[in-house]
Amino acid sequence: MSSADVSDIAEFYRGARGATAMWLLRDRLGLLWPDLSGRAVMGFGYAAPYLNLWRERAGRCINVVPAQLGAAAWPRGAAGLSCTAEEDALPFPDLSFDNVVLVHGLEHAENARRLLRELWRVLADDGRLLVVTPNRMGMWAHMEATPFGHGQPYSQGQVTRLLNASLFTVARRDVALFVPPVRWRPLLRGARTWDQVGRAMLTDFGGLTITEARKDVLAGLPTEAVARRRVVFAEAG
Image (cartoon, rainbow, N blue to C red; front, side, top):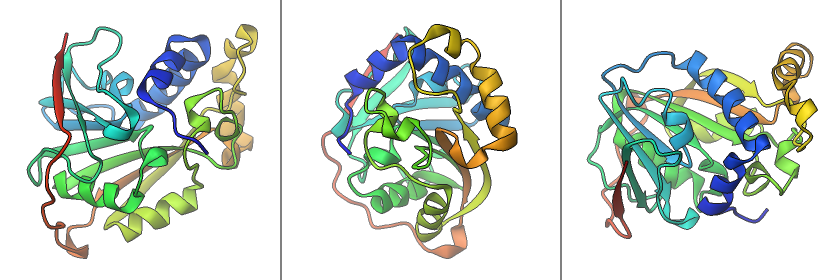
């Protein structure tokens, strides 16, 4: 499928469908990582709306947008540090972050394994990674009117195998977004009910897969440093 860009994703989140998707996904991420006080946190992809869960209490919180999605931005007026960088050449030293959340990132990656190995490099030895991807069996992955309908969708099994091949060990899995991807506001207002029913009866068909993985230090050594390029920092406030 074609790739979205950062302006398309930002526009989606300004609408009713995007707002509904955001708070449903935030619910699940907040349950998985309820408190990241004092920890160094990075979001990769278009993760800024979700980093707001932890930004105020985290020791450091950085939003990184891959160069292929466009210019970096921290939306909705939230203060924070953003940058744009190549997915395989992040401008950070080894072991820089305790937690990384990947949203609107893996499905748009030019090389998913190289991206994951680069995230492995910048994660601390006890670091954790949350990967959110469109579920190839869900409705949202097949609706190009939303950013979840662009890029490469994944099943949970595919994400697990990709993470294992990239020196991560899967710790937990979850799903989100069972409400149909429509604009009809009465239906969107019942989104939490859709999620409750879907979680109980149709777990394979959630719109998003969520996978938490830990860095497997014994599986290999960090990749060799690559040349840093096309890095743009911007302080937003």
